[in-house]
Length: 305
Ligand code: C5P
Image 1 (cartoon, protein in one colour):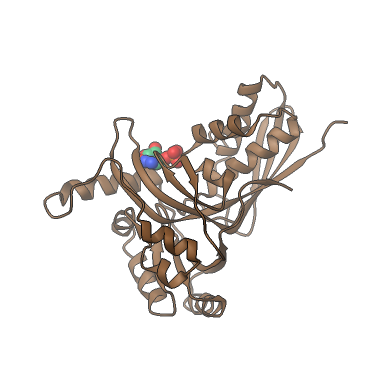
Image 2 (tube, protein in one colour):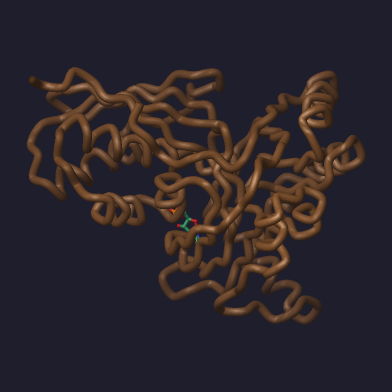
């Protein structure tokens, strides 16, 4: 019997550590990052259709999401069609919760959920390896959204190995109204490094993840983890949106153990000591006129519903 529709979910992420190496010849940077999936998930429903179309809705403003062929969910579906020879189409309905252009891998999560939903709808039965390879072609963060949990990402971020993390961490996320384009933030980092090359340590080609961060994750200790949150892209995001500095300062002086720009920003992520402090900080930001969300990490990766 033909399948009527299939729904899959996939999580957004934060980078607990994001070390950026030198610019490569292919325009990417080698990374050493620790991804952690957060309890903010995208939901994609795939329905049979003659062509390739998508629609977005959800609790956040989706009016600026381009519905053109370069949308990652449509590219994901076309990639499966190309890999399998499937000659039908699909309509993809996306419920978006992860901030758009926010540095939290929302578009990547859409792609990861679309890959699972389309593969199941068309019954193309691509194995895990084939899906992960398509995921890496779609974007550097898509493979992580497929696996979720906590993982080290090397290379462009697509070369993953799992990390042992115990317990859960409490976060407060503060999305910002104007998104940042990932390539623009990387370019700003390169510019900053060039301008300050005499004052800052030389940029390494292949950076590393610090051991104490992995120990803090193994122990499930937020106080220890707070000391090792680091993001090389933060300086670039702060140059492009200086007002993020005030948000970071506010959160850190109102109960957060540490605040960090998430990925290429501009979402800021605050690591909280417990759920009470998280609820209180959400309330304080809201009263200040800034939208804030409480999330937990880690959560599982993309799944069929
Ligand atoms: O892989 P993805 O399409 O998400 O990357 C978007 C852009 O971010 C790249 O074109 C590149 O400018 C930048 N990037 C980078 N190094 C990485 C990942 C992304 O320079 N490791």
